[in-house]
Structures are given as C-alpha cells and as structure tokens.
Length: 95
Picture (tube, rainbow, N blue to C red):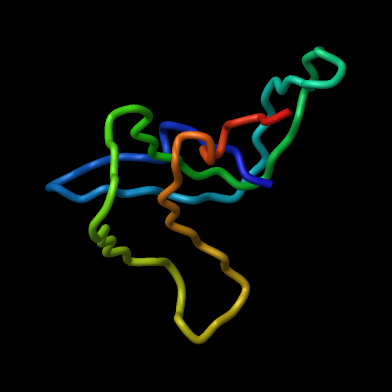
C-alpha cells in the first residue's frame, strides 16, 4: 500500500523529517517470477532512510527519539522504526 519516495525525507536544523501522505501514485514495477515490468498503483507515500554499508553496529545501545503523528489513544496507525541488518533491508528480494 506504500510507495517510498526521496521527496518525503528532509532535514532542517538538525532534525530528520519523514512525511507520509495519501494519494494515488503510479510507478513501473518488476515481477521477479515472470521477469516483466508492469504498472502498479500505491495509495500512501512516505520515505525510507538507509545507511547501506555506512554503519556497523556490533553491540551496545541504540537510542531513537521519535515524534509520531496522531493521538496516542486513537488506534489505526502502525508506524515503525526499524533497525535491521544488511539482509533484512526492506528492498531485499530473497529466493
């Protein structure tokens, strides 16, 4: 349901901002099984920040401070902040 775009990520005054929006986005996707391209639609846009081969965490404590949208007592949103290893990246297609 979500399409990641670099225009949803910005920094200002030392703060990282990742915006999420609603609206139809069409893009060319690739089917790994048929090896063919096709047009796909997603209805939410947001951003992904990756540090591929730039950061190696082997122990200790990682602390994240995040301000999430919405009210804390209203359900329906599933925001996430993930710290994953190289093979757990969101764009990895395993076979």
